[in-house]
Length: 342
Image (cartoon, rainbow, N blue to C red; front, side, top):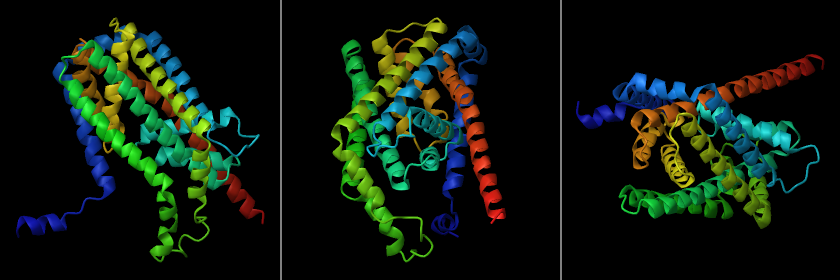
């Protein structure tokens, strides 16, 4: 049996591929901690303490509120009952599911469902979620650009800056391409795909042909709201940089605001590029070590910083997952009770 026959018989499902990627990333992170010294990393974490974690969580709450607000302004069809608290709840669920379950698209789907269950029409909920993701990506490009400008300004001889600039250019082309595809009927095509594949009966009642596409175009016509959403997301990214500054401050390693912006924007650019790796396991840790070295951070401090951010995601995300599970369970049993009373 030749290599071609063997490769044709080996089929790896997407779920298996994600599991392999996550396992490799986690093993890499563990190896990095062991290599650079468990005791040194632990000492850095212990220095930050609970006061450092509390400060990081406060900065995260500000970021979460800004992201919820940026999503809310896209709801061009006014729903009086959908106040900012609904979008804060939905955004929290999106982050919890996305960060902890690490299933691509699951956080966005879960958060859009929360909007629908609160009275927002399905096409509007889906459209606002898609456009919000787009404005978040656009704001991240701006955020990374600011970080790169600061990196070139303060570290002009750093060769890694040119690699980062090349990566930013590729990411910009990809995001602009995604934006153009939305404007030219990407989701209209996806909505009509079941009919083209002869699956109309299986999808009957699930899709309203063209509705999401139309809702997306309606949102993009409101240029002021779209610009406001991108601006609020940019403020959210800056609040995320404040998390890093606070974490380093409580660990006794102060960096300038410009260096923190450069560090955080480049690491998150790496995380975005490695979206196929669940939790960006290993990628985030390696990114903080490599990029942090440009600003004088030791590998033990860089790893401790990454682990503090991981701990923040668990502390903020676990209650959200439990609350979401409880809400879904309550809906399920309420539906079963309604059916039994018919």
